[in-house]
Image 1 (tube, rainbow, N blue to C red):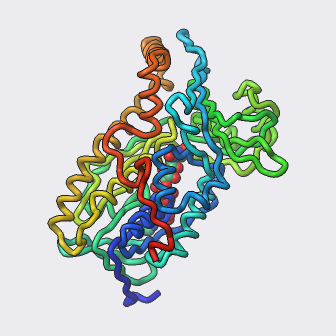
Image 2 (image 1 turned 90 degrees about the horizontal axis):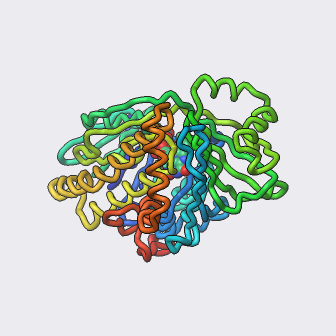
Image 3 (image 1 turned 120 degrees about the vertical axis):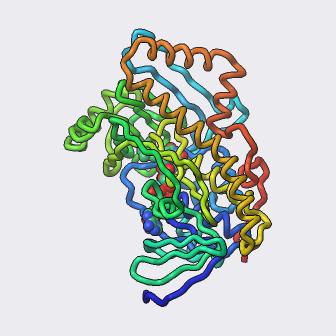
Length: 416
Ligand SMILES: Cc1cc2nc3c(=O)[nH]c(=O)nc-3n(C[C@H](O)[C@H](O)[C@H](O)COP(=O)(O)OP(=O)(O)OC[C@H]3O[C@@H](n4cnc5c(N)ncnc54)[C@H](O)[C@@H]3O)c2cc1C
C-alpha cells in the first residue's frame, strides 16, 4: 500500500476484535459506509465469552447469530460456591434463568469462533471494508477525521469509533485521560473436557485468589461434556501452573473443582492474562467515540466485559441515528448524549467488579462478613434476587433499539 493510497468512509472503526467488528456491522446496518481496521485474531488460548440476552438480541437483530449459534452453549443457571474458607461461609447459591422467564441467561461461545464469524460476515457485507492492518496516526477536526495506515495509505472518515483496546492511540490523540490499575492476579484460561455433564449451568467457586469458574461449552464428537475455565490466581501461581504437564494441570483443576465434573482433560492450549482495570474521564472526542476496552477494563467477574461493550455500540448507533455526519453540531449533541448514557453503566460495572474482586482478595473478617451477608440477603429475598439476575442479563436504564425484545431485523439481503 502506498503513502498516497486513499480511502473514504462515513465511519472508521479502529480495531477488528469482537468490539470493532460488532460496531462495523451495526453502523453498516444503519446505512453508513464503514471501514474497519485491525488484525483479526482467532488464536486466543482458552478464551470464551458468555453473552447475555441483550447481546444475543443485538446479534440476532443484525442477522449475525445464526452463524454463531452452532458454536455456543446455553447457560440456564449460575451456581455460586463459597470456597474461601471464611469464618462466615455461605451455602451454595443457584440462580435459574426460568426464575426471570428466560430459557437461558445467555450463551457461551469461544472468542475465536465469534471473531471468525463476525469477520467472515464483514468480508461479505458490501457496506464494510475490512483492512487487516494497523493505524498509527489520527487527526480529529471539526470538519472531519483522518487516520494513517501503518505501511502507507490514509482513510478519511466523518466519524471514528475507537475499539482498539486498552492501549488505544485514538483515545490518546483525543486527549482523553485514562486511569489504570492492576490486581495481583492472572486469569488462566483453558477449554476442558470432563466426565460428568454441566447441565448448562455455570459454576463459580469463590476462592481467596479470586473466582474459579466453569462455563458450559458445546459438546463435540468424542467429548460430549465440555466447559471453559477461568481461574484467577496470583501471578506466581500462574507461572507454576503453566509449567505443569497437561495431565498434571488437569489433575489440579479437578482437585480445585472438588471432583464435581469427574475426570478432567485439557481440550486446547492454556492462556494467561494479567488482570488490570481502566476507566476514562470521557468516552468522546471530536468526531470520536470510545467503545469496549478503549473505554473500560475490569477482571472477568460476572461475564460483563463484551456485554458492556455491545451496549456501548448499540447506544452509540442510537445516538447517531438519522444524523447527517457532515454536520458537526448535531454530532456534538449526539456525543453529549452518548457521554451521559454510558457514564452510569460503565461506572457501575467498573466500580462494582472492583469492590467484589477486592472483597475476595482481602483477608479481613468484616469484609468476609459483609460479602456473606450481601449474598445471603440478595439470594433470599425474591424480588431482590430476580432484580439482581435481571441486572446481570438486561441492565436497568433505557434499552438501546438493537437490544430490545423485538428489535428491527436487518437481513443481509435488505442491506444490499
Ligand atoms: C479471561 C477472560 C474472560 C472473559 N470472559 C468474558 C465473558 O464471559 N463475557 C464477556 O462479556 N466478556 C468477557 N471478557 C471480556 C472480553 O473477552 C473482552 O471485552 C473482549 O474480548 C475484548 O474485545 P475487543 O474487541 O474490545 O478487544 P481485542 O480483542 O483486544 O481487539 C482489539 C483489536 O484492536 C486492534 N488494534 C489494536 N491497536 C490497533 C491500531 N493501532 N490500529 C488498528 N487496530 C488496532 C487489534 O488488532 C484487535 O483487532 C473476558 C475477558 C477475559 C480476559
